Structure formats: structure tokens, C-alpha cells
Length: 211
Image (cartoon, rainbow, N blue to C red; front, side, top):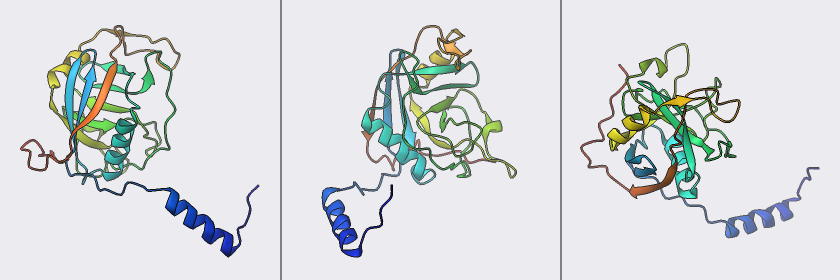
């Protein structure tokens, strides 16, 4: 049952809450870099904070919580994408925070090497799962009549590792919702770390816009 607080009690509650919580309001750097270690190799992502601030903040929060450690790339489609960040090594879907708003209209395109958020048919249903484009997949970009898939970064090191994952043999997974495209040899994320707080001067920060 909900209760209506009197002004005095409400003031005390707000004061206690403010003193008990010290939220981190430090703004994210323009181009944070994240190293993703897997049992198949390592690659580095550079993220575009100004283009997708909600998505980048969400992703880095999951990174800092250690959420991705022990998750797998559960979907691999050669010449298309590799997708992960949702299932653990037993192919059990991990509980996530609330979903985030779609930022696909940010001028970034689903081109080879770029990373984007996976979602359902609901455009605002992305949570923790992400994918990396193995090819130019501009069909996933927004159009005037529909939402696209939010691109928020790109691979700047280790694309050969991503490609190797993309070449893996796949089949049905151990759970009904993963009926195909699951690597027969599990690709496990062993660690994800923010390695560069601000790479704004990097020559690799040129984000190809949507034509």
C-alpha cells in the first residue's frame, strides 16, 4: 500500500536519502575505450559518448558491475553479426536493469566493425545485449518510417578476433529460444575493462555517418 507523507516527514526522508547516497555525477569522456577479453582472443571497443550518451552510460555501467564476465556470444551469423552480453556459460539469461531509450537516429551506421545494441521488435527494449557488425549492415539503420538499432561504438583493435568468432561453426543451443546460430565451441567473455578514460585525440574516432 502507498502512503502519502506529510511535508515534514517527506523533508526528513529526502534529507536522509541525499546524505546516504553519493551518486557518481562525473561525466563520461568523449571516447572511452573498453577491452573485451574472451577465450577466443581480445578486442578493444571505442565508444561514442556524444552520439549515444544513454547507451554508452548503460554499457559502461554493466562493464563496471562485472556483468559481462562469464557471458557468451550466443549468436554468430557469418558475414552478418556476432551477438552477446545476455546469457551466461550455462546459456541462462541473466537478469538486467531496465531497458533504455533508442538512440539509433544519432548519425552512426551499422557498418563493419561497429558495435550496436540488440533489442526485440520494441525499439526501446535494449538492455545489456550488444552485437558487432561483421559486414556493412545498413538495413539495420533507421529510416524515416521506422527505428533502427543503436550504434554506439566500434572495434579499434582486434577485429581479427571478431572475425575469427564470426567464422565459427554454429548450431542449435541448449535452450529453446536459441534454436540456431549458437557457436558449437562456446565463446566466453572472461573480462571487460575500461582501459582509456579519454581518447578524444585518437585518430580512430572518426565515426562514419549514415548516408
